[in-house]
Length: 193
Image 1 (cartoon, helix red, strand yellow):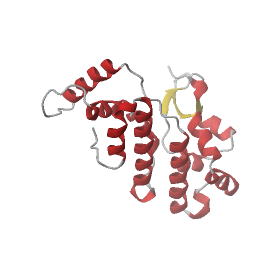
Image 2 (tube, helix red, strand yellow):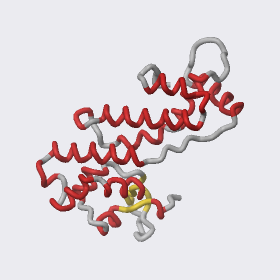
Image 3 (tube, rainbow, N blue to C red):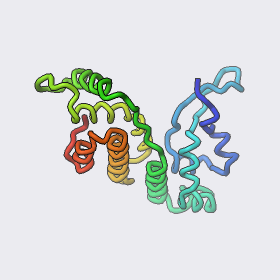
């Protein structure tokens, strides 16, 4: 069951001053979809993370769109895409990255299992820094949803770089012995694993 105190429905967004166009252009896809307890048929309701909504509301683009009656009314798709890009970047900067904290032996065990699952080649070298960071990055894939609604022309590469940097910085902070591998990956030296 979804904890509705941390989510806002479309109806809730409208009561906060959002238009449907602003929701589409600035928030993109909902974070989750749930069933409405108010309707007998249990119709699907789109829910947006409150923290993400509040981060976008603090952005300049939201205020501009709110004054203009929605991003689509400003100057078309290009302005909407730019507003979406800025909103996603603001959300990426504001979203706390929560790295799972594991004892070193458990992290090593999980990294070995992860290496085997993804078909990592080479000797059974245990949970090296490379595979430990790969396991942790995979465990944090849920943050990739913050990129929803961004396409190549609307700054997706920039947002992916920011997200990659924030995730690896959080891993390095939580696990200082992995900092060198995290730096290598932030500099573009790491693969997707």
